[in-house]
Length: 277
Length: 230
Image (cartoon, rainbow over all chains, first blue to last red; front, side):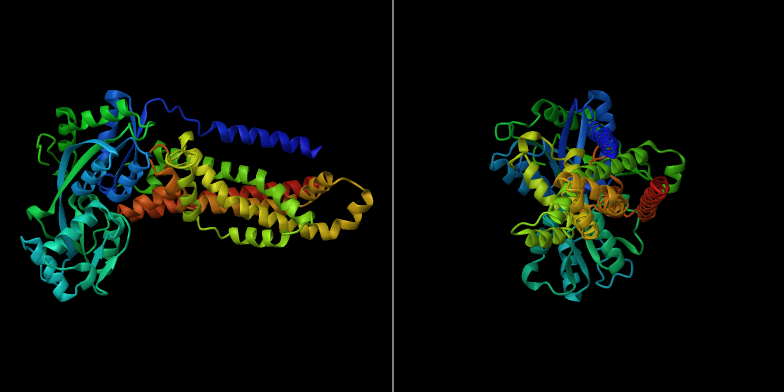
């Protein structure tokens, strides 16, 4: 009869469906991190080295810094690895993190169309460049997603003496997406955009965009790593998570970070030994 | 996946990561369709055959839920499975199982609503016959589902199409973790954000090919089944 056949088929499918995703989840941690560390290819390079040494699988969920910290706040990650010092300190103050370790830095660069309608090319003062963009009402793409890059951009507007929430116009577009999506939008719109250098170097759809402003110290981009507080979130795998953090800031981990290069260019500069970072 | 390789090269060279992604996409979407079928078919049949107060509003809501935005389904399941949510103790967030749950939520209304319509249409045709046979309701439901099986396959394919195509729900509850919860659609989203548009479009073409292949297989199975059934 048909129903017996159906039942057998359903049971087989059911067993297959249940068995399939049941991976061995022996030693693994979840790290909430930022799109820049993923889109720049850093994790694809670092994690296999770490896994070979310790046997720990690191599962990276790449979000904006604000979102990544929220995932930590909910207890859905063991470690957060982000780049917005003020937001990280707030996270610690709320008791969600144990301790912040500086890991590395790269820098932000102002990307824009090669024909440079705001005339900012070669400026060494990022604030002046931002003022020029605003004065010319040149198209500007903002991440608008509470990411570390978004925070840095807002800080630069402030330094430039511009209250962007009030003085913005149609030239200023918040897209609410990751770094790569912002670069794709800027490429299509002939617009300016602030990017971290790592994502920019790794980005393949550069089109007519180029780095126009770089080297201003205020465009520094510091990364920090924190264990999510096990006292607050008892499911946190504190030993494995701490092992990952310890490795990142160890001489070996720091060397691996420095060794990550694309086309001979170093993307991240380790600075775990700098207490002020 | 290595840089500077086209999707076709990856496919031809048997790139293990690409195959793992394809396999996970199929596992998650087909599991979701299976569970959605187990829930949706009986629900649809019940709504088709049993008259009760509030039935019509339920049908309207069910039809509307066919348009449930994946990102809303994803967010709801995220909040449910988060460590701070009601089912946080299961530790399912950012796993393939969570993706199956989210897609089951998306696919069940599609299968239930289409099955309801199909079976109800058939019921109108069979009513007198089944009434004359004097069989119980469960037997009626089984008979109608069996006789509507070829049309119901289309409902399952529609449900599977939804699951295979969506990215909004699984990227939220799965997290797009490399080697663990990365599927075809989340990989396409990621490669797009890295600006590797050729690889993204290549992956998209592979996904489309798989969808066409599975639909062709379903079509052949249906043809064979119809011949066999006379």
